[in-house]
Length: 553
Image (cartoon, rainbow, N blue to C red; front, side):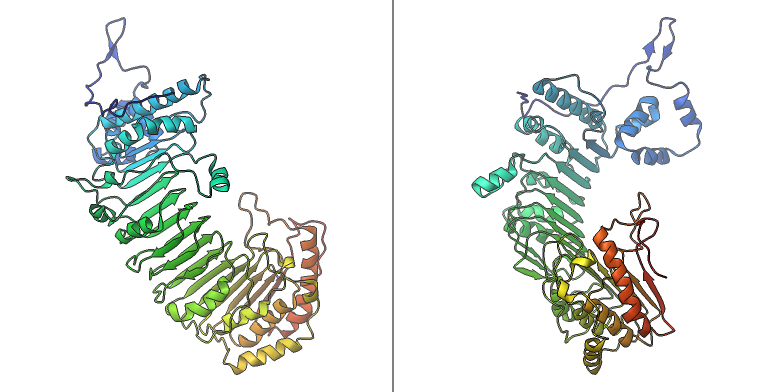
């Protein structure tokens, strides 16, 4: 087993300048790794010293090290290189075939090589601005030896100094995490806990830190660490992945991050309630993924613009009562009824909203009848069923209440994934000559549902469901004077191709047949009601990507 004493490694003293290599003829030449004339060419280029140093600092770490091998100028810059990255690539292990079969010898080799890289960097006096220790792809035994021997703590204490901007520590996940939760009801305890004391001590306080990314470790800031509050005042990005942290610890931590702009939480299974204080006025992005115990999300951040949630159903979801943002995106993968929440809560909470994007997979309830209006909303995007989950029998016409509640609306986009799955057989077929549609339209118009600014409407995944055809007819009535473009696309989206192959998204045989039915329904029930001033586009699946299907003109 690899053993390293906690005090066995210390930053080395400054290096002495290397002596020339003597040759047999008495001449002194550079080492063999140098290229003849390389340094002379660099010297002859008339550029200021700080420009060369800036160029060197922008290189990837391996390229910067290689440049230092062929140039004395870059060698001086290398000792002040502002970024330190330790991973398989920088150590040259990603493409190298190991000749060592013993696990202990392999671990010793990796640790020795990493130590040499760090020692070469510590020979300079420049403050490291970015530190990335990515050990997530290493063997668990190697990382365990690094933690047990105290090397990881030594590395962090050597580089985390006042002036550092970015800290990233990524460790491998516990392989028995799922089994541990199944048998014992909790996740595996992390072997390593990030030392919060690094960020503050009696003499120096780190106030330059802007980004912190941790993976597969513990992080326990407590209220007793009052000196830490000043260390987080410049923090703008926090990413926690498989980190053991409680609700109280996370709340105390967020209270000190007053300029936080982005918060990412994934697989943090000790968090039951996420409560974001209103003091975080700069928070723009919140991403939460697969936090098993999370049941409550409450945010008081007034400028929150993007919310991504992929997890278990929540008991409470609240975005505050005074949103000041003009752009809001809510993407929910395993949380239903997002449209219901947005329609009932957001009009009174987000008075300045101009763009709203709602993406939901499983929407059980119809869109609510909205008594308040989005007075400033100009762009509305609703995405339904962006996964294999769907809600059969959904009433698309209920979305008309959303459109009616936006008097300033200019663009409306409705994206329906797997359109054929969104309705039962009894909801499929030909609308009743628009009778029910006209009745609902009249009801909406009596309630003042005229949208005078709506110019562009796009529906992708258009299918032959009665309620969807009726929704389209409703839009033609309320925006008859302003509508300029109406696009009905029976494919997953003409504007959403696979960029790698420039091909449309795949469609099953059943979906292709439904597209033909939807085309017929659009031409029979929608096209006759389109005014001459509206540019109507009814699109079928792409003939180049979906061969074997014939569509009428």
